[in-house]
Length: 419
Ligand SMILES: *Cc1c(COP(=O)(O)O)cnc(C)c1O
Image (cartoon, rainbow, N blue to C red):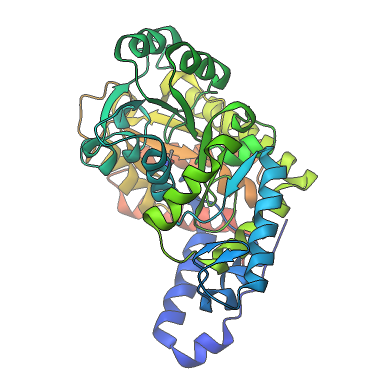
């Protein structure tokens, strides 16, 4: 189990207010059960790369073709990140400059589609991301997005229904990859559907990138036209994103990122991405990815055994959706707040065909990337399930919830990460 000491000596002397807040946040992260599936804990090496001098540099352009002088070292950093990322995902071409997941998706749309073109993405309420065509988002405003969903019986993707929809609307692009879908995605089937209707085949693997890199979920990169991912979720790197694509789309996509959408890349983040890719190439990361899934399955089984309804009756990946409204008569908002009071962190989330609103839905979304990084295994997932049930059952007893929070801290102290 990793354990990293955080000093921040200069910050402590020069800005006590910000220092104190950062230390308080570190304590919060260490003292609670973190179940938000889009979060992780990065290594000290990633943190150090992020807090380093490449942040001072301007380097618009790409390696060996920059609009500023003095980029010979930044070129080394960006080349390293690209080379390692290609190896990790078996990618033909990589752009490591996207600032985060949303701008990465925007860059691919901008490169491939014209305004008002039709594309297909999954509904937000059934597991898609805002940038997959939601009406409040640029993706739903600038393009004509026809959304697909999951089957009402199985709560899983129905590939034949998606193919039928695609044949009818003939989209320019079909997007797979989700934010709140607990099941394995049949990427080969998506490729087949795209080929049959002549659509650009894109995946956004932000949530599952670490599982794809570690062999715990199929990796679509070698045969998809373009794949975007954040680097800060299961991949366990700095906040940021990357785009991987076939060579034939490389120039268009690079131009969409810069100068199309962004200015200077965040070179300190690029350095941290390079560190993250090297960590993910190690055999221990494969183990990590598989353990995330084992832990999620163990947690889902234990919660179901204790009477909670889990959407689609389980999980194949790192996350699950708990129907707290049906199981416990609590709304997602109430459950999130209850668990927070007990030092357990999750996020409220809609479940498929939710009759409630996204602001106060029927479910919560939980996952195991952080707990697995801390070294927890299947047996600890049983304890985590007990904490969750106990908290939900005592939702109107603040005293009890505070007691649980103390027990949660004692439990977490056995799995130190940052000192
Ligand atoms: C998290 C996520 C994003 C957005 O990433 P940001 O870095 O928050 O902009 C995009 N797509 C999916 C599927 C995600 O889960």
